[in-house]
Image 1 (cartoon, helix red, strand yellow):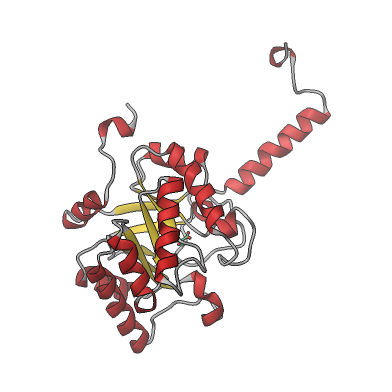
Image 2 (cartoon, rainbow, N blue to C red):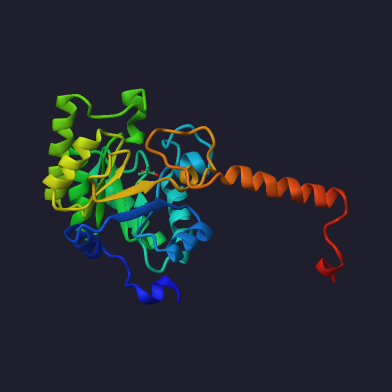
Length: 271
Ligand code: KIV
């Protein structure tokens, strides 16, 4: 039997219950219909249409170039596939930081045009006003603290964040602020495991980690990284479950050879 027939749709309330029951939350990224359908049928709890699409789908070095229209395109494709998972969509760089009205407008476009379930924003106190305004429209918001790739030019590097006391203190305060504002969950990226656990115990909403240790309430990875499609990215936090780039190359080489040798198509493969 298909998973969606036996399990209810994942909502922000279900995620809250999972935290209370200490049931870990599994989250992955997806950017297209076919992959999203596989993830959903496998039983993933949350699908993130991440702005990492800028890297893994479009080949940009950072997440900065991706546009709101690009995100709506990816999110719409994912929404057509998903029956059970909660789908969260990143607000891209430049669509929410400076102006909370623009933030609300961007979030509404994602909810209306893609049919998403929630949006994700990077940052704490600096984007507090945008988070609050989006929440007043009834749009669920996920926060994102620690390493925030949209601010890469401010930090200049992708090293582990919040290793110093000041930054760790600000991260805890930001997490509490986002919880108080009404966010339903927070992502913590690339921070010390001890700090990840501390935040997860201090706040009541689910804390999902990527390189934040195993004391948080769930984990997220970029799909193309964990499947081994991306080749040059291997941070310590990444577990590769496959070497898909090699498998795909092998299949493509076999196909090329079959075409060149006129082995494909054979008699059963033609009309
Ligand atoms: O865009 C993305 O894929 C993300 C994850 C790294 C959490 O934000």
